[in-house]
Image 1 (tube, rainbow, N blue to C red):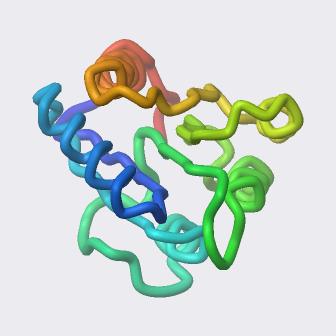
Image 2: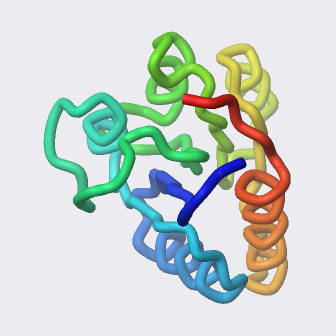
Length: 147
């Protein structure tokens, strides 16, 4: 069983979507600490220790990664590919949280090993509900392997 506050890596470059996600997370009352990466390079730096992250402290292996696909510098698909191809991070659940409904994006994400693919709801109430369910499943119900 997991002890202490969970760690979440949120990879989102859009300021509006970032604020909406953080607001929804606060609204559902999760005690998880959220680390924010605003591009794919920051996400990989956080996970693999190659540079500065936007937060300090905590375990670099989060309980779950919330990943947008359309990112600057390094795409979300490349971040996903890197996470799932490295033995140190392969077991970290990755949830793609994106606006893309493109079948090619969905298929490629699952081919690369994504754990879940969620299209961002447009309405804030629906978005908050999606975040609530996401937090409930990945942080409370899902049992990760021991490190």
